[in-house]
Length: 84
Image (cartoon, one colour):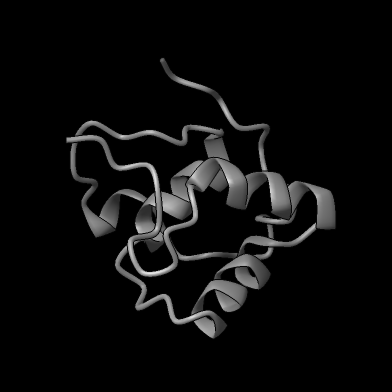
């Protein structure tokens, strides 16, 4: 199983991180935008990891506690890392 997108909005984490970088969105702003589009928050742990590290594909479930909630240091998204 590959986890690479928000299942509610069908947007890939790579596209979301590219958007955040282009628009200079903080992690909190990116999450708020997704919530406005109907995201239920199930993908937030993956989105937080993607924003902070650039990892956009996951082959295993992430525990909610593995990535802390957004904070004031989450202001610049890392460049997405593409996985084959």
